Length: 453
Image 1 (tube, helix red, strand yellow):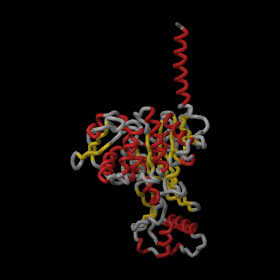
Image 2: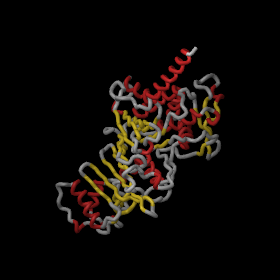
Image 3: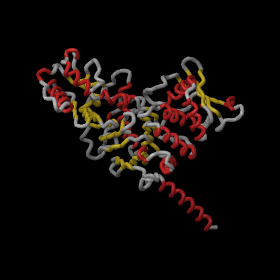
Image 4: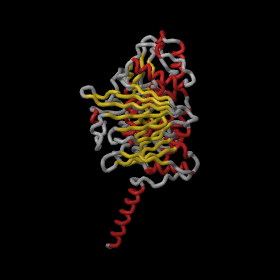
């Protein structure tokens, strides 16, 4: 990933739900989150989704939008850790890294009568460290900025604090903190030049914040939840990218419609993936009016003579098609470096289709998309191993994170790498062990019945 497009490369969370102690996950082109129910798989991603929906809200919702399209909370009590030893710390933190080795940590604290507020923001870029606190004075900010500039330009000792522009203040920018100066035009040219090099995305309003580097990666994240709704007779026309605010399922029809109108080869790629998974041989978008689109799919798995006359509404076929279609569209439409977070992509799929889904995930990963798949499918995981063993997916593109809930309720994440044979040590206990025990119980029952005759 270091040589590819910049992207989110690692996430760390603490104090959030069952993740009381800090847990980290590295993101590779194919990142698999596995573990038992309620082990913390969703919890590691939900802080990132909170940031996403806060940035996408039509108006400033405060430090965090708790009840939104991606994550829904109605109280801070629902998201703060309650495990032993954390009740006296009404805060949680999320840190994420970009692949160019810069990171940002946000600490949110609960305040009575207010809700969650940002209590601290820490930025790191190599040797450059910057801490922003809500109550920093002008002198505190000036000292912090001078430390940053001295670090970046260590050989230059000509900076004079008395010549720095006055009136610096800390300003909350939705879920971030930044430094604000009201009159950027009064800055000395040498200061503006230094800031431009340190933060080239500095806007004309003179909001100096490292969040300018991070916000676009949060807003470009594509999210598909495990609850993707029932298939509809018609879908509203929506923007077809590159940003998809909220969850992705309502955009799939519009993306397909755009591919169809432009003759985009992505539509044929989608059809081939659906056919390979044994779901349908074709999908098309049909305009109902200027605001609505109908999705029609083939009832047969493979094309046949007169097959175009055999297309029906997606609402009239099995759930496997309607649940998988937005997953496949998201993986195909995503650009290199863009994160696609899929909750249970195998939902409503036949075991054979679960295996073939692994190939679609691998294709996206090989294009440079960052796929984060939260899964309960042992078949999908096994097929990923097979893809590695057959050389269709390199080991450095895959990362498995196994989530376990301890007796005291704490989540512990164990990362694993695959070797060239696709193996990664002990198989997760809740997968093959459960399958083997079920098989043994069945054989024992048959043997007992036969012995009693």
